[in-house]
Every structure is written in structure tokens, then in C-alpha cells.
Image 1 (tube, rainbow, N blue to C red):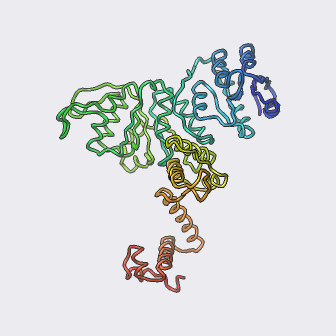
Image 2: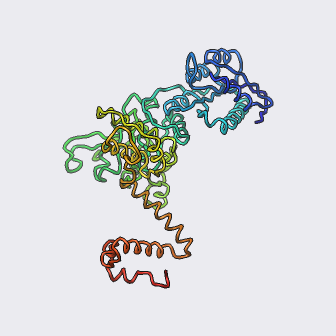
Image 3: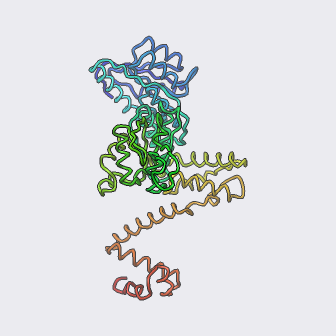
Length: 463
């Protein structure tokens, strides 16, 4: 690691062996490294000494790393702080990011990440020195939404949440079904200045098109059949708060136009009225569709897409969060026990391995349903692999089909045959095996006529 000018770095941790390792790991010309084993000692050093970067553990005494971060920002606003922890919670990551932490790193990854993060921090120090002092501050906020997980992909998402929550910029949350997009939306709201009012939620795909405009913008009495009284809409009710539009990719074209107007100038009119209503609403949207593709195919307005996608938060699928699977499973089992007033079930090591081997195409939602089924069907309080009914939900079947099609593609390439013909021949072979070579039964299972089956039967030259 190289530095352009003289820098001072402070390491703060109660683990003396770690302090020794980090000092050697970060040693570089032009970098002076100081060390403290308590938060109060570190606070005194920061008050008296110009420190460029602080690297401190979350667990400190007599106060924790987030409090030290807060005091550092108060006494030395230009100092950059990197927090470390064995397993930082998502709420700790968001709070630390909002209070000004440059990064939050897991200790097990420090050997691979710390030098790079520190080098980047010191480059920022040099750039700031060249540009002059800055007075930008990010006040700390405390939210209430807790998202379960310790994996690096999820931590990266939480850092974005912490940064974006302070602004009013529209946020688009993307990801596969079941990944927890509404939880992310709630985190953005709960850690924002608007958190004093409740966030309102509307599922754009669950409301008929003829009623969706009224749900969003309200209506006047008599504006349509069944409108027996004036009613306010979600935009009116969300004034000074956050409105979460789930499945925004399902918005009909007529509603897209009115939504664009709200995003442009904060005004709208109720259905059946010419009165212009002003509202101050923070918009968070979510979709599992590829909105860019929807735009290219003419189903979603391009100007609205760019208005909504000011900040995109992409949620990783559960299969990319292996470290979170066991934690989530235990969390769901604990919640089920508390709700039902029953003994909490435990997972064996083999059961955890069983869970981690599954692809979870239904993501966190599928895992939650799996734990609920296991709790309902298990004969004792210790869950073994055979007690966990993985792969019996529709989402799991989709994942199995995906795997099977991938195998077919690979096999057809090895066989040097046309993929579709290869897949058709394999389906016919399986259908005949299951029907004990009864062509009529096999054709029925495939949804074709016996004549069509005979036409498609592989010839000897094809075999």
C-alpha cells in the first residue's frame, strides 16, 4: 500500500493480537499507525491528534464503536471511520452508514478487504485536502426495521439503504420474487426523516386497472359507478411520508401518465375532479420485472422509468446469500414457536447442510414456508434433513425444472443434436417408461394424440 503524503491512522480494538496483526498488515511508507484498546482512550487521541482514518471495532468499552464514530464526527468531522465486527447486524450497518461510517467490514474478510478500503480512504483524504475542507454532515437516525442476515451481499445492500434513506430521491428496489423487497422499502422509510408517519403500501398488480387510479389518487362522489362519496387516495394520505408501490411494472399506461406528473411537480387530481392537489411524498417502488426490457418493448414509459430509477437497490437471491440461510431458518423457527406458544425446534448440522444445498428459487419466502411446514409436520423438537420438506412447493418445482433444462442443454451439446428435438425425444422416452411402453397412456401424459406420438417417436437411425 502506498500513500502520497504523511497520514495518521488509528486502530481501536480490545483484541491486542488483532491490533498487532493489523499494524503489520497495513504498514506502509508515509503512514503512521496509532493503537488504542478502548473507546475512551481513542476519543481522547482523536481530540488531540489529527487522525485521517479510524478503524474501530463495533464492540468496545466503555462505549461501542457507533458511539465512538458519533464522537469522532463531532470532534473531528474530516476523520474517516471504518467499523469492523465479527457479525454486524443490518441495523448496525444502516445506523453506522447514516452516522458517517465510510464502511462496515466483517472481521473474517479483513485479510482480503482492509488494505484496499484503507488505500481508498487515504486517496479520499488526499483529494479532500486538494479541494479544501468540507462541512458535510450526515445526522444519525434510529430505525425499527430489522432485516436478518450477515452475508456480504446483504451488507452491501444495507449500506446503500443507509446512504439513500436521508434523501427524498425515488428508490427502485429490484430482485426476484420472495427476496424481501418490501422489507428494504420499509428500511428506507424507517431510517428516513419521514419515519414519524406510517409508510403506505399498495400492490399495483393486485388491484383491477379500473380501480387502481382511484386507489392512488382518490375520487369524487359520482365519478364512476359505486363512487358514493369523495375518497382520498394514497398520494393524498401519504403526504409528508413514504408511498411504496409494489409490482410497479404492472402499472397500466393511463396511471403511468398521472404518476409521472406527481414525480415531476408533486401535483395530481382526484378522479372526476379538476382540482389540483399538492403533495409531498417520497416514492419507493419495487418490481421483479426487468423494467428496462419493459421500456424497450413499449409496455413502460421511458421517462417514468428514469424518474423512478434514481437509486436502484438490487436485492440478491437467497442462493447468493449462503451464510444467511441457517440464520434465517433459525429466526423463522423462533418466530413460529413464539406465535404458537410451543417449544422452539432446533436444526441439526445435517439439516442446515440440507438447507444450504437447495437453490431456493422462491428465496426467503420459500424458506419461511418450508420452516412452517417442517414445524407443523415434525414429530419431535429436533429437525433432521428428512423432517424438512424441501422441493414440494411450486417455486421449488420451478427451480427443479430450471436445473433439468440446463442439463438437457448440456446433454444436447454433447450429443451434437438439435436441442428441441433432443428434449422432445427425452420427454417421449420418459413418458413411455412411466407408462410401461403403453403409447396411448404416454401420449395422454404428454397432452398429444397417439398419432402425433407415433410421428415423433425416434427412429432407429436417430438412436
